[in-house]
Amino acid sequence: MRITDTSDLWWKNAVLYCLDVETFMDWDGDGRGDFGGLAHRLDYLSDLGVTCLWLMPFFPTPDRDDGYDIMDFYGIDKRLGHIGDLVEVIRSAKDRGMRVIADLVVNHTSDRHPWFQAARSSPDSPYRDFYVWSDEIPKDAPETVFPGEEKGVWSFDEKAGQYYLHRFYKHQPDLNTANPKVREEIAKVLGYWLQLGLSGFRVDAVPFFLETTEGMLPEGPDAGHSYLRDLRSFVGRRQGDAILLGEVNLKFKDQLAYFGGPDGDELSMQFDFESMQRFYLSLVREDARPLARTLARRPKLALQSQWANFVRNHDELTLDKLTEVERREVFDALGPEPRMQVYDRGIVRRLPTMLDGDPRRIRMAYSLLFSLPGTPVLFYGEEIGMGENLDAGGRQAVRTPMQWTDAKNGGFSTARPSALPNPVVADGFGPDHINVNQQRHDPDSLLSFIQLLIRRYRASAEIGWGDLSILEQPHASVLAHRVTGPLGSMIALHNFSPNALTVPLTVDGVDAETRLVDLLQEGETRTDDRGRAELDLEGYGYRWLRILDPGTRRLS
Ligand code: NOJ
Image 1 (tube, rainbow, N blue to C red):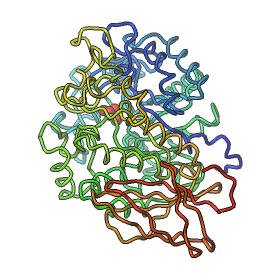
Image 2: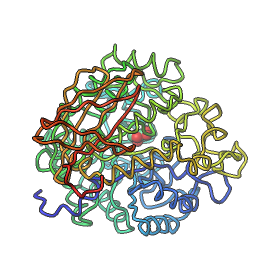
Image 3: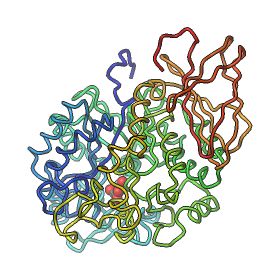
């Protein structure tokens, strides 16, 4: 895929905000968030500086996996409103310069989807081959994604008289993505939502449906990627600048193939799970080197491909890419109680509680998120420092209602608390202490800080577009990185330890005095004529420094 015009690559420096309509804002007072509520909060999101909303699944669902179990790909769950309400949200977001993407879950359906109901009813059903069946459990069956909740990935269906494949819950039978008829249906679904105004999709569980495709077709490994290329080119034909943001929790070297390698003709973006996990290891060790080493080996991508950076999402904080010993270290420091852990690999807490609410460390973490090359993705409530409610159980702990005010239910809903999808956060991170209303007029609040980071990120095109280099300096606790793009270059410093220190740096390519202008505070430092400078950093401190010629007229 040769790109000649870069003006359409909006995702390269977007600010994504993930939310579940069900837990964001309830406007009709029934206890469930709804599209009416979201519509009333679009001004808040655009004030924050968000440029693209990612809506978690809103389709009709039995809701046994938070909507990732879909019964009808063309509808809206009626608890959330009407399809017309969604169209209003898309239009009003667009008026405010925000795009909307949604989850595309095509690895599986709910077992209550009419396709599965038809498929299980008879071997002769035209829908039988929409799913993957077997007379016996295959010997090389993979492990379940949800150990402790599911026993395996094959379950027997009495009515069908055969086993069916489900990589996730038993009630989520996997679609047979090798079947051309299934592909036709998936294409129709994509076309439908693009036509309604979506700007793309967050594609759920990509490696899983690629594996199914490969397993069912004789071409082997390329069958999956060839399907992903087909999907991307279909989306491109329907709407040139629509994106596929893939959930691919694999090692860098394997992720590269999902971008379509140097051609960049598969996924437009992928979450960087590797750096996210090493970031937590660095936090715990107060040692920036695990993260620095990971970032240094991040593959370089095609111009149109992009990393999506994140600190937390709606699932467990997975630590599956760490060694057993490293994982233990993070568990012990950030999620020591059994109820804070799931699936032997993850923690079901949000960042601020894991850091005991320490504002210095929380701010350092978000400063880093917004300064790393790529596109930042926030999960709702991160901007105000929400915590979790472990009583909600497992992954639900971080899916509690958004905290708007200190009123009943955090201002999320006027319904009785038992009608809410999840209980609001109850402890020191609950609405009494943490809410939007209180923070929006306080220039020192986390919300104001995140707003500033977003403004600076959006004004620093090099972060989204530039190349990364890790700078040499003597402190193990400091990450010093530089991003250089066609329009500018900046350095960011982050201190993972509580000790204040001075960072000696040499700015490459400088042969005269150069200005290093602070972007998050007032002030600047001059290098000497060989690019050398000494920069002070507080305990858990962070600085963004724009590299400018002394004679420039650019506003920093
Ligand atoms: C990944 C989603 O992020 C997760 O929440 C869900 O349970 C699984 N896919 C299954 O759809």
